[in-house]
Amino acid sequence: MTSQPPRRPAPWQPDAPPAPAPSGVRPPGPPAGWPAAPYPGHPGGPAPQPGFPATAPVTYAEFYRTPRNRWWKGFTSILVLCAAVLLLSIVLTFGAMGIDLVLGSTTMDDLASGRITMTPVLLLASNLTLVLSAVVALLLHRYLHRQPVGTLHSVLGRFRWGWCGRAALVIVPLFVAYVGLVALVEAPGPLSLDATAWAFLAVVLLTTPLQAASEEYIFRGVIQRAAGSWVSGTVPSLVVGTGVSAVLFSIAHFATDVWLIVYYLVFGIAMSLLSQATGGLEAASLVHAANNVMLFLVATAAGQMSEGLDRSAGAGGPFMLVPMLVISAIAAVLIVLARRRGLADRAAPPATA
Image (cartoon, rainbow, N blue to C red; front, side, top):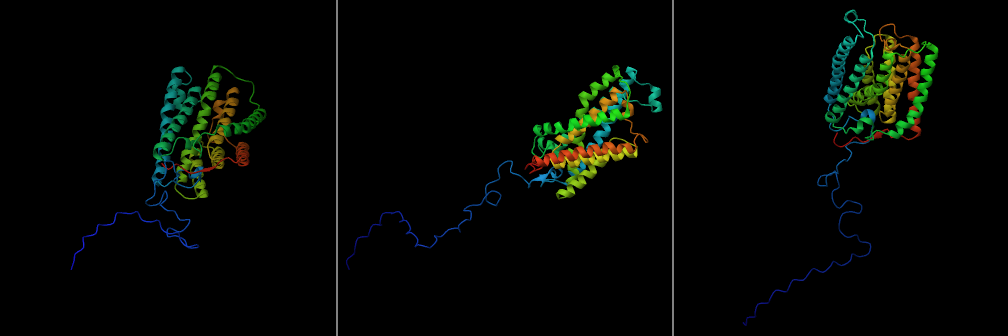
């Protein structure tokens, strides 16, 4: 048998392209419309981009109910804020009394007998108590609830100056008319602008707007949402948050008159509903500031600051129904205005919350 030399292996050749599929036959592969690779959020897919919303859009009262929320966070916020308001009030009030003693605005006999009259220094101490407590509220919002500072203003994460300006065009004229009518009905008498009155005017104009806004940021901005985070759903969150914040708001004014207690409850409920409907604190802060500044200006000009801030039993009466109706009506007008302008009242909380 003759042998043949071994054959060399054929050189490598690239595979020929597959023949086109017959007409009407789909080539192998994933069905049409299916993703060829995992998409963000699914196992194996790319990670979501920073800032990707953690939840669906929610209302202002629900903003603390996020995937990382725990029931104790809301409880801690409320407890810390109540303690801050109480402790700061005690410290600053005693400090103000000491200053008044030095200035001769009050005496030890007055303090011992409980005859404490309102002075510019005491009013300043009261306002600073709330301003400093609002700083505590801001820290809780930022570091305990892990929310950006901007979401304390509104669901859009910023203070909406345009909306605030439009609301002011409604609020300021209404309060000017209301306070003017009150002054005419009560006939406070001649102006009394002595040195004490000028000091009151300075404190009212420089610090009362901050005091009023601070109350909104404390009670509606943090406490309402902290309590609202305990339950799920728009209505339950609003009901629980409004109830807790309105009750604490009323207690914080230390009123012992039934009519005044009800007035503060109504005021707190109206501001909660206004914040919920507008998605932020701009309008509520403006209403609160206009109310306090206007009424304090009239009381100062009439020399009746102590009477205007009297919250003891008997200080109120059925006449308190008028300011309750006025506050409720102004809140209702602003809610209608916000709805007509299509103001955003929902947004998704940040992914970091």
